[in-house]
Image (tube, rainbow, N blue to C red; front, top):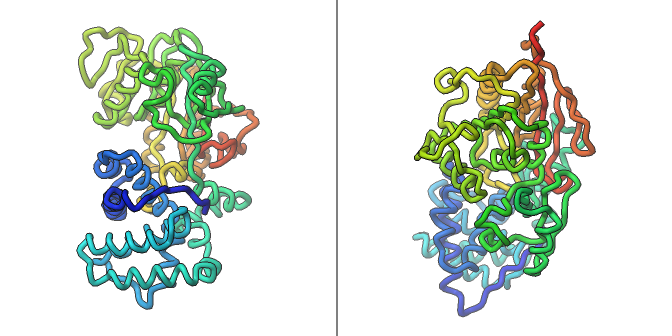
Amino acid sequence: MNKSVVKKTASKKAAVSAARLAAIKCLRQVFKGSSLSAVQAQNIDILEDRRDRGLANEMVNGVLRWRWQLEALVSALLSKPLKAKDIDVQLVLLMALYELTECRTPDYAIINQAVELVRKSGKKWAASLVNAVLRRFTRERERLISGLTSETALYSHPDWIIDLIKRDWPDDWRNILQANNQRPPFWLRVNRQQYNVAQYQQLLGDMQRESEVSPLADQAVKLSQGIDVRTLPGFAGGAVSVQDVGAQLCAALLNLSAKQKVLDLCVAPGGKTCHILEHCEHLQSLVAVELDEKRMLRVTENLQRLQLLAGAASATGDDAEADTRLALIVADVRDYQQWWQGELFDRILIDAPCSASGVIRRHPDIKTLRRSSDIPALVELQAEILLSAWQMLAPGGELLYVTCSIFKDENQHQIKRFLATSSDAREIEITASWGKPCEAGRQLLPGEFDADGFYFCRLRKLEAV
């Protein structure tokens, strides 16, 4: 683990307690199956003090990232495991151990706050237990940490993820697991319709923000540290978006040109949709399809901020100014006959639903929420979407299949099965300086070029003979 600075003072004791209360509420809900993004909005984003929000986010993400290592330490410190009904005591211990190992906060302050927190959670009987356990840890820290020998604890991943990554990437599994435990970099995509990268870097420099460009994507800029996006130059007016550099590869791989008809499937939250429109201004049309109406609203919001929505026909709201350039459709991709107008597309992007195993560092709750039993159902769903999309691709057209997964069942194995049963499909080889060539497609592994993990495969539909 890398130490992070969390500044606290005695005068902020009450506010710090508010941050910890918010953090434990979030963790409790995630451990019960809720996504971090949902509970974060309900419990952390509503905190008034920016420092409280920062501390709460640090603790929640830290515990979710290092959960299996922290749980191993708790097990070593307790003479017998806590009961399931005492989950709050377990969470307090996990939070405190994370702070003791990761944050530059005085040990006594962390322990005092943990004792106070367990009392506030209604488990007053556990106050002395928490105090004794944490004080023991501070005395035996080096011995306890050096005693962690299992791969589960050392790499802080559930066994099934470790086993699957080992199977799929036997030469890279350690690097992948280590990359998953890093804090994610802060990548931006500069809107080429407003600024080039050099111009936007100058704006960042004017506000004393260091940045660097990427060799992967020509509009990608990485900030040296995180920032409230609302303070970014021109953000409200659409000058820039937050998007991982790996995700920014899609627009170029689609091989877009003017006057094409493009279909974008499973689009929320809309980052790739917006990038397509920024990348190629003169498309004949773009149809964006998303199953979830609430998630489609996020797509609409992003398009509006980037000033890309003017003239869009929307299935979710007012289309008084609609034209044929952009259509937003809320529908099940697999039920394409219910919404498709019969027009064949020159390019199709499938941003397929997946395990998200390539973006664990950005969403550490994936390690807690995802199950090995989820993978077969996802593979079946992806296959159905791919088959449906293929019916709407024009002969000679190209389809780009993308996941943010590193599991081969969802990626190259999925495509190999499709190619074996589709006589009119051929792979277009992706030759690049990044990623690993697969039996079909190309895999960008987490951490490579400081990007998240993504799989890409280009397919062409053969002309009718």
